[in-house]
Length: 128
Image (cartoon, rainbow, N blue to C red; front, side, top):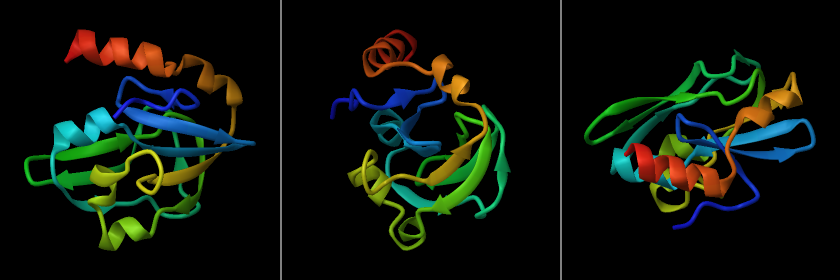
């Protein structure tokens, strides 16, 4: 799977899709492949304040437990409830149905520090 070019990417392997002042956040295809079979997702609470580069959720796979870091500072305004019953959606479709949370962004300039799809692909090739 290629990384959609309309998204931004973090070094912690999260993706961001911006819709107005709402950032839709999930984990990248690269990350879900590293995790292998995802069996549980601990989602953040609606209304939770999150900080850029701080943990906001947890993903458990058959081989490890990993934090999902917020790529932006803001407030969680929606969570992907379907992941509670179907955590493997992240394995099957990380960029659409596998989103984790929607965050109302405090400062849009934080997005400037994220990578393009091309830069993220170079990053993963060089660092992993």
